[in-house]
Image 1 (cartoon, rainbow, N blue to C red):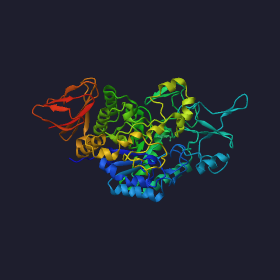
Image 2 (cartoon, rainbow, N blue to C red):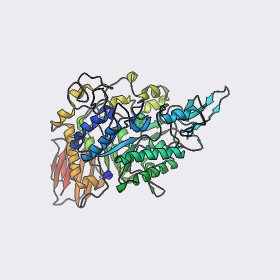
Image 3 (cartoon, rainbow, N blue to C red):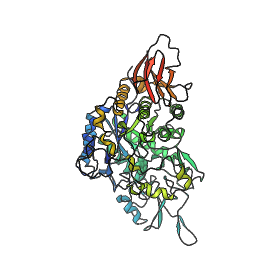
Image 4 (cartoon, rainbow, N blue to C red):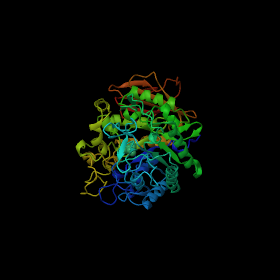
Length: 554
Ligand code: NOJ
């Protein structure tokens, strides 16, 4: 039987950070024509959906996550025609395309905000979240409540001198929150979504989507500290995140997507919280919402078989079919996965195996496939706005417990296409917007394409196998619990075909049965091994440290 899931339920997503993917005009900044020129890399790798981080008009204080015109392209990235060409050429190569929508906030340079902040009675006065707050004994303005920013800065409110009022900025001070209770805002934003859908885009990644609707009465957040997805928080965002009205926005946005023929435009939400809460973005009160949500726990988890087993078990329990979990080990906000595992390529191969064979949608970040690592850039030199504001102003206990104190520039440096000066990202001699990692000389697409033992070759094999094996794309997943501590083993089954994946994340070799079922005369045939020393002997798999095998049970 063919794989009958909708396209998005079994796709493989590849995130491109446009500023760093490919520079077509030699200005040291990646651009849309650069992405178009490299679409064949995606096809060759075997990913199926391209997600492009924001390239809309923006002052770029948060590298495009601060939009000043949702309907236009930032000039350094190209033109609206380039965006159209990107959609069309990706489609011509069989790729789906998702853009990145920042619905929660705009840039403070967006003309809407410039107008909104200018007075209390202009036509856009209510387009953002304004509040009076109160005055303390000395007449000093104080914010209306205890809400902290998403980064846990002391307050989510910024003072607007002209209006003598506070505006909400859930993320950074220059990213004012739109007021989604205002009908005009909704109409304008949904129309903008329709404009891009009309141009053929297949869906959207939704930035900071859990924070769109806040408590209307502006009641305080619960002051209790919390951990969400491994991140420490000074207070529990009970009134600012994952509120019931937020789930309703998901459903409204879905309705906009479903206006388009085929019902196949897709929404994937950047939302944080326990899987049971995140499920409500997919369906709430009988209304369908987002198709997928990021499940970020893998990203925060140390490399550990027992931790990963627990996560897989949890994702399966809380996102049972037809719900679709997502797996992500890297993105533009967090440390590179290879750096997190100490640069150990064997471990990176194990991670790649899990990512590409678990039930759900894998999301890769550009450069992950060639083993790009963090590029050290001192915090003091950061272009990323976060280090300068955050580190200084967080309570020490939060600082200490952050999984990493990262200058996000370190994971956003230019892609390595070749070993030449400029890394094939730009022309030799050009000064790039962020430095190029010195290891591009050996670790790059061109070199790895010709090396059958490279990480790139391993990803290509895994993704080709996934594409050719319906059981891996859409089969059930059965996770073994009675395995040695360092082992992960699961079986994917569809229509009588079973593929077993066995991984050893420990420092010692192990020998484990390929299945717990009584296999009798059935044969275990090796499909792929991440290490040539891994072997199958009858119904036993021998795995060296940090290796994995994919085996078909016939
Ligand atoms: C999440 C994005 O991934 C991050 O890069 C950005 O800084 C914030 N949202 C704010 O939009």
